[in-house]
Image (cartoon, rainbow, N blue to C red; front, side):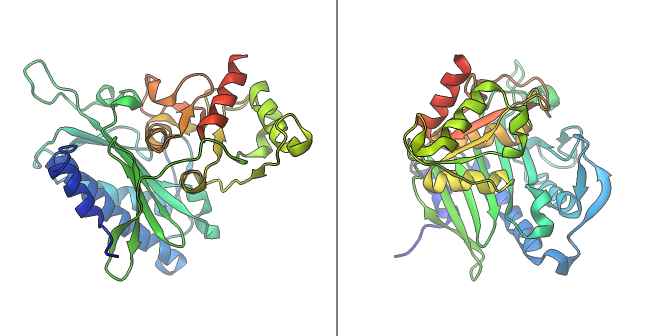
Length: 335
């Protein structure tokens, strides 16, 4: 059976469904090419002197890995000249990056986490890239407005596309354009992304959860109640056993949820009162994908995609995955 390539998939969304325009198609293809380049660097690991720290910190005060900085540069250089974007924003940069004046400006805004889970690089565990695409607001005369920080602060519902790449035993590229979630695997012989996960659907029920239990002493009561019930298994109120999985790499944990169901939780706690993950670079794009695959995503109280961002590097709580389990945790928070 001949598989559909990512380019063929995107062309069909443009030509047959009129779901995207040429600029958005080219933007996603450019992001995918950048992810191939990052994948190659990640796979080389120590052979390319890509491990270790740079000695610098990002806007969140986190130590930057060599591959964090390199991945950020790859995405910037790939996307700033194509004429699709008004500006870019990265988890690794303090402020948005405007398109250089000698390049044409487009109608879209791109946000990305260049290398999610980078603390796992040195121990050879899957890492990845996450991205989100928004339309840049327009002025009253129809021209594209100044792409400052305020232009990016749109609720997740306004996303026109989102996706992520997982650099693991295989490199997988998952995207949504608002009509479902789809996965593509990198064929290293042809260097092409081919569709391997059509119409991804997350089971509504699950017996698997992912959470960092080392933070249990800091959890809020609704989260503790839910996890305690899971751990009680057949002898507890749920009447069934659960398995726990935790990779500490969001792209890997979320891809597992997309592949076979489950619930991923990084809740707020007494140490991280607003939550730990970034709304704009991680929570929004992942929530868009999860909802498009039939799952649910909440901060414990309301859907993540309905949150109004207050800052480019805002953090939030994240609970996403199989719908019935997410709804249960949300109900515990209401009580």
